[in-house]
Amino acid sequence: MIRGNRKRAVFPATPSQHQEIRLSPLDLPMFFFHYIRKGLLYQTSPENFSSQVDLLAQKLSQLLVKFYPLAGRFKTSPSDGAVYIDCNDSGVDFIEATAGDLSIADVTTAEVTQSVEQLFALNGAVNLDGHRLPLLVVQVTQLKDGISVCCTVNHAVADGISFWHFFNSWAHLCRTNGNEIPNNPIHDRCLVNPGGSVIKLGLDPDGNIPRLCPPPLRIKFFHFSAHTIRCLKDRANRDSPVVISSFQALCGHVWRAVTRARGLGPDEPTTFRLPANCRPRFVPPLPNFYFGNAIQAIWTTATVRELNSLPLSFAAGLLNAMIVGLRDQVIRERIDMWEKEPTVNRLDKLEKNSVMMGSSPRFEMYDNDFGWGRPVTVRSGMANYFDGKVSAYPGKEGGGSVDLEICLLPHFMNALETDLDFISSL
Image (cartoon, rainbow, N blue to C red; front, side):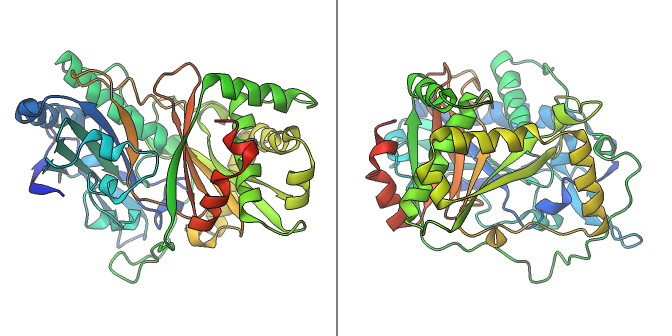
C-alpha cells in the first residue's frame, strides 16, 4: 500500500512567455478520453530515494521551460468559445510516495493487478478536467527494491509521440546533469491547420462530463520475440499481393485471435482501429518534434467468417491498405469535415466487437536512463481501457521484440489463453 504521500508544485525554472495556445482540431476531439498514464520502473537502492527525488524535481523544473504548456491550464474563451492552453506557469503536481511492501516483481507480473494503479495519479480524470486539474502530474514511488517514475499527461495536450519526447528529454537532463535537451519541442499548433476556423464545442468543464466506466476486465501482457514476429511477417507475406510490415502482421494476428476468443457469429462485423501518426503524412510534413496531437484514428472492418476462413495475409492486407490510404489530402479532408460538425470522441461509442491498438513499439521507452541504468519494465495506469483495447510496447531486449498489453472481458481472456494459434506464437 502507498504510504507517506507528499505533493508539491513544480514550476518552470524561468517564467514562460505567458502566451495562449489554441487547441487544434486534432486536440479537441480528445476531451472525453482519460489522461495518458505511463511509467517506468527501475532497480535501485532504497537509500538513494531522497537524492533521486531531488534530482527529478530539479530537472523537471528546468524541462518545463521548454515544455511550458504542461505547466498551464485549459481556458475556454468567453468571447469566442475556443479552448486554449493558458501558459500561465500554474505548475505541475509532483507526488513523492512510498510503497515499501511492494516489490518490482509484484508490479511486473504478466497479469496486471491493482498494485500497478497505486503508482499513478488522477485515476478517472478526463482531459476536459484540465480546466481545473494540472495538465501533468508526476508520481515517484519508492518500492521495496526500486523506484517507479510515472507520468499522467493530459491527452488533449500531447499524443504518445509528444509524451515520450517529454519523458526522453527529462531522462536526458537527469542522466547528463545538463541544461539542454537534444530536440526542443515545437509548440506552433497552427501548423496542423493553418487558417483554420475557431471551433466552439460548447462543453461545460463544470457540468456532467461523460466518463468511461467499463465492466471488470482482465489485463495481461503477452511477449512476442523478434523471432516470433519475423515468423508472423513471413506468414503474412506468403500469399500477399502487397508487402506486409512486421507490425501489420502482428496486428492482424491479434485481431484474428481476439475475434476467435469472442466466439462471434460468422456474419458479425469486427473492426480494427489504431491511431496513425500524421506528422510525416502532411505535405509539407510536420516537424518530428511537434508537441501536441498529430494523430488520426483509422479503421477497417471484416466479417468474422472472413477473418477465420482466410489466411493472415487477408487481415494484414486490410490493415496495410488503411495505413497506406492515410495521406495529406485525406487528413485535411477529415479535418475540414470535423470543423463543419465538430464532435468529441467517446470510447463507449466504438463499434461493437472492435479491437483498438494504442501506443507503439517505436516509442523510446527502455532508453530512459535517469542515471540509474535502464528501466526494468514499462507499465500503464488504468486509462482508456475497455474490452478490446491493446497497447504495444517495445520488448525490453529490443531487436524488434514487442510486448502487447491486452484488455478483455474475463471470459474472452480465458478463451484467448487457450487459443492454440495465439499461444503457440508466443
